Length: 160
Image 1 (tube, rainbow, N blue to C red):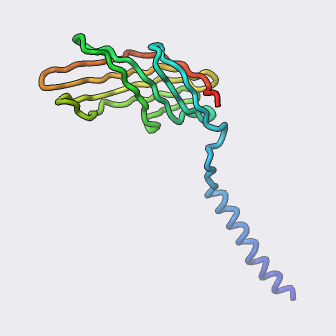
Image 2 (image 1 turned 135 degrees about the horizontal axis):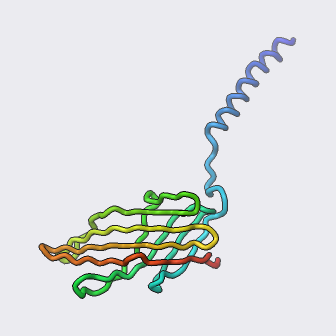
Image 3 (image 1 turned 60 degrees about the horizontal axis):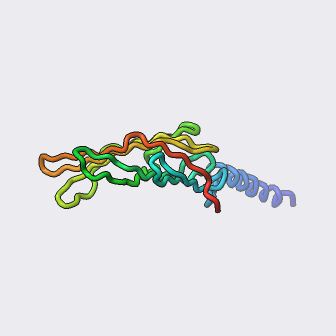
């Protein structure tokens, strides 16, 4: 009679150990990220334009900054909303940077456009930073360069 109990133990114990090892190696992903719930932050740039971010605990999930560009040759100033891809974020503690290399944008009325941007930001209790955007318009031999320069912004938690 002792043999069936021993056989059950020989099956149950390795199975239980296997399940524990599997669970340790394949943790379930929670639908919500760990840490504090993501929070929306809103604010203004030094130019009086909108800036927003979603921060999860101390991690930047997304940021969008509107900047006013000054253009060469007396061209009409432009506003540009930049939302760098999270793939560009380099975060070290509370400090976040994002550098978007020059890229071609959709052409308008025969003008080709290229764009590049740079973000330096600090997340935490009082998120703030600077964004710099450069937009170049080209048609034939004519080139118009529009730049924001570093534009400071600060954010506060959105009231929900």
